Image (cartoon, rainbow, N blue to C red; front, side, top):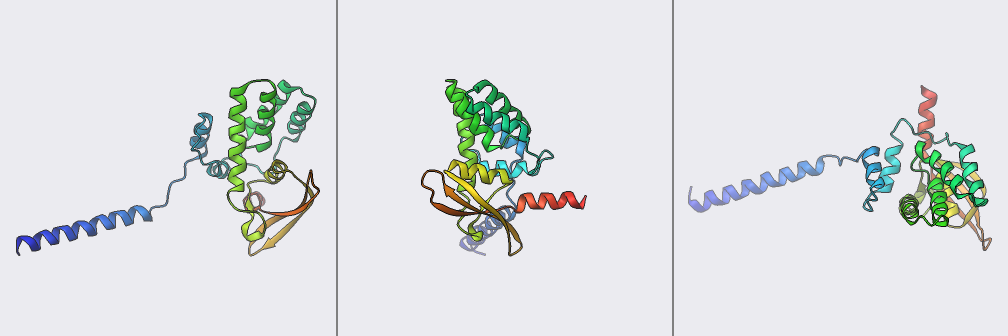
Length: 215
């Protein structure tokens, strides 16, 4: 075999080997960081955090319960905020966040309270988290149909999201379509009264509930 032939053979083998190696890497499923890893990054104000992954990874923890909101504490934090009792609002919100860090409403209340208390550092943090959680839902789809429904991990996210974008719920109904579950939310804009309909995919909380029934 000539030198040129041997060289071409070696090059060809390298190309095949490299291609196979890369293909092998692509075939490997991408590892999604666990909840605690993502949470640590959020606490460090890491603006590159994937908040959708944070929410979804939370559903894999033992603390996940889409129907277990502390309604008393939530009522307390909203009432305290309305009465401008900001320390009390923050305290109640913190109690919620200790059990469920991904609670949009608790972060939102905290951001307002800390803003009124002139604590810019804590305001910036809770505003950052609130925006990250909300955008992780809004960026997933447009919510205009079941095929493009917003994906949520609990019903509370639906109300929090709609409230953030200025809508209040008039009627809620459950829809089953193509093996999936959806909440159809008929709403109206708080300022203009304009009606709008939004769809939310609720497979995650429904699947969790079904698992509880099978235990």
